[in-house]
Length: 309
Image (cartoon, rainbow, N blue to C red):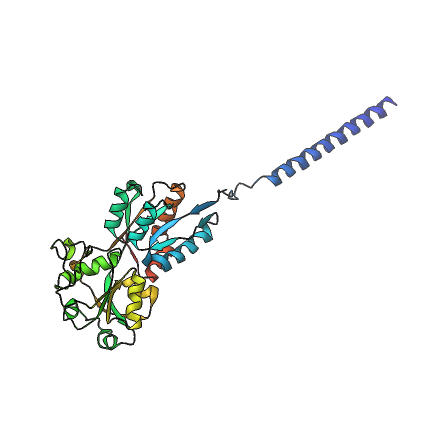
């Protein structure tokens, strides 16, 4: 009888141990099911970031496309109504207390002003893009037919005085570069008597075309977009704009490239603003925008060349 009892007790113990192991196994499996597998990447968590960019007018279409591309893989980042104005107007906005995380200017001189005024962190400044200055005319104009194929129209042709011309005003870097070039063919009188790349290309309130072949024939506009429209509409014969503006606006045809040695180098500097509350995220965007292969393709499609290329 005792022998049967011992067998029964042993069987009960064995059953209990099997049950315990089974429960432990289930518990262990449940725990592992909740844990990420070793070969599964952990999802990185990001806080929402909103960036405010101030960028030169000529960058509008290209920058919009690059920002859209960036947010596809960085969905925690949004861009708050990026401001596209002339470089001088961007500085005026910052002077008035406007907030921005990034400033991208179309002029080294305007970025120098931003540094001097304390709008940007000079340590973050770098040259982002380079560009060309070109002469354009309306697509259906006689000049387009005559010079559009080989782009052989020159500054000397402008200096003949036979054509009405559109340039940016003093606040527009493209206009400054155009005036520098025009000074080399005696079509712009620098108030300080300088010419070419030594000139600031600004009239400073004077009629800098008086007494030149372009006297009474220059239409100054507040943006390169408006300059382009003057040529497209036929209001002027020739307009001085960036090569990237031809991609951006259309409706015009390049008839000549302005020699690069007649004006200062066309460089777009970028920098993080001193008051930025998202300086790290802003720098990450700029780094990506200048190194990502797809971003580079977009810049090229809109006529911009990275300085690092």
